Length: 450
Image (tube, rainbow, N blue to C red):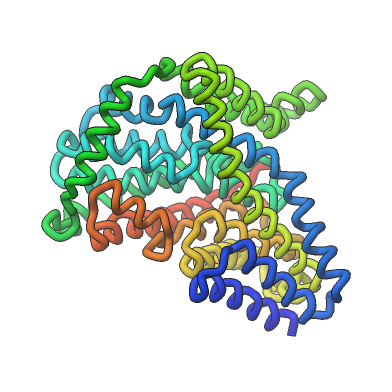
């Protein structure tokens, strides 16, 4: 009955969010209460699991999320991301621009929130579409969607990546080593496959693109504002992102080389690394845009991080309640076959759970958090490294971003696409990326680190 009640709780959470438009925080807490009480955990045990799970994940991940969101807000205010995209347009051969954009977004931009990324990049993508050649808008739209979400789920400090790492207890540097390869590789592979589809007649501008006078006016206003902005040099603007990545990678590779001491641990600690990035972004912002605009950016980041932290925390609560029910021992019986099959089945299970959660909920981050909370209690029964399961969850959470996502409609409006065109770009590339990255994760499981 524990498995049945768990399924009921998950379905109820999904229905509350989709059918009754209940906020994910409320839905997740209600589902946690039902599961704990229905499975005999008891009133005190359920409350203890909910609060304990929330507190545990906040201790592990709260500062990481807060620092990352604040850093992204400051970089946005300084125009750092727009500078990066504009630089790519200037220096990369036109026909290679989608690949360059996808790789850049999936590696050095994950600290900037996805909505901000598309708001800043869309006008540049639209204005550059004519340079790319036939179906230029579709090519760049696909690259935007692919790069943004590959970075979001695979590369630290992308929100979904950090959340999965914390919920599964994965070492941050280890995840980064895998993710920094799988993320951009998935982006390149997805863009290549998507271009093949476009060449085969997938795109019809007459029905897939929309012209909007309001959108054109918005682009003109954005260009005028951008022309008047004072921005730091590109290398300096990106340093708050690049330096933390190098610090975390240094710690991970030092550990692999057997070099372990207090100094190395301090430098490679993800919280320290992101704080260094935040401090650099803060100082740079004070110099470039002034105290008032810097304080406004910090305020915007604090408001954004509050919502993110709540959703992430109650995802941890759900996982703690699931663990308290004893479901891990029950599900462990599903993996009693041979080791080779166990690895494949375990990865597919994690991928399917995350994919179903995303199809139902419409949020990549919430799907990744919920799936990690569901899978985390059974990790001890699996013969697969936790980092591989985390990557499988990240891969599944990408699957088929579509009409129940707010990002879908924002993407549609900013790129000037019809609903059909958005399905042909955003939904298509996230589906391809999810499958491509699943193959990469299966391959990575053959050569685990450590």
